[in-house]
Image (cartoon, rainbow, N blue to C red):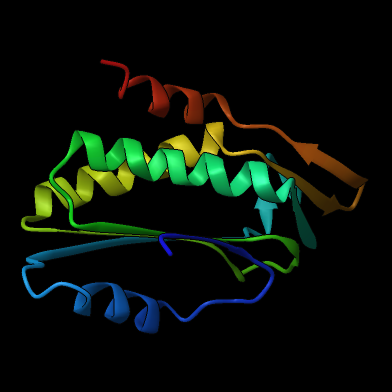
Length: 150
């Protein structure tokens, strides 16, 4: 399954190896791992919690992967996104893409991540010294998304 939303951590090398070995024609694998930062918007972050609406979230992620597959000649893509409580330095998200050549894999991976940051229905709450706060997408995320409008 190209999309998984889960509470458990993931093993980068295992996930990428499985994705790569699924097709002997793979010439490139590009992956991105996002982690919990210990500082955001000038405040220390001691913990983060991600919430989602299961059926809606998985479908949104599947649609993002489908859009990437329609734009580039990629073989496959994998998105693993964690939900629940997490600590700084823990992995949150993995996006991995296989294709015949690196250019397509890089572009598709970046596209998936840019859409995921702004279009996937996740709600992020950070614990800071001033208490809990909900975090919205940043302006830079919207700017990154805008470059794909064509």
